Length: 245
Image 1 (tube, rainbow, N blue to C red):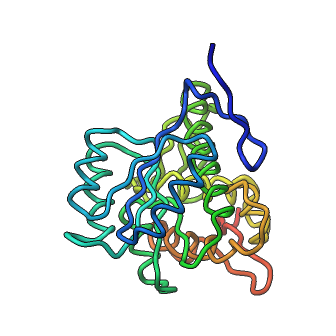
Image 2: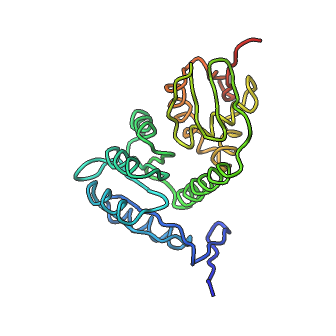
C-alpha cells in the first residue's frame, strides 16, 4: 500500500509518486536546510555543490525541478541552467545572493522560471516549489485538452494548444512562466491587472512580498514581445496593449 505524507502547507504527497528536486548550492548550511525542508514536504532530494556535478546529476537523475544557486564553483548557475535545459525542459528556481535585477533577468533569459534572493524563508521556498510543479501539471493537462483557436492581437499571436507565441509571424521563445503571464494579460486585453492579481493567477502565490518577481518577469517578457505591448500603470499593475479597432 502506498503511504501518504501531509506537508507543512497542508498538501498531501503520495510516497509512491514523489517528485524529485535537485538542489544545487555550494554552501553546506543552506543546502542542508533546503534539503531537510523539502524532504519534510514529501520530495525526494539530491544535492550538488558545483556546476559540472549539477549537470551530470541532472542528466543521470532526471529531476522534476531544479533549485539552482547562481554563484557556483566550476561554472556558474546560468551555465548550468543552459546545459540542463538543452538536455530536457525542467522548471528552475534560481537563487541569488545579490539583489541584482540584471542577474534575475539573465537567469530568466536562460530558462529559469522563478527566482529568490537570499536570505529567504524556507516556508516561501517550499511554496514556490509547489507552485512551479503545479504549473507543469497544468501545462501538461492543457496540452491534452487544448483550447481551440489562436488568439491574435494585432501582430501578436498566441497559440494556446501548442503554447507558442509569434510576433510579426516570427516565433518567440517564452519560458512556461512567461507564457502563462502573457496569457493572463491577454485574457483581458487593455484591462489593468494588479501585481497581486498576477501573482495569484500565474504563481498561485498570495503573498505581496513576491511582487518583484512579477516585475522582473514583465521586463523579461517585454524584451521578447516588445516593450510597447505591455503598459505600466504606476502604483497599480500592468495591461496588455492591443491595436485600436
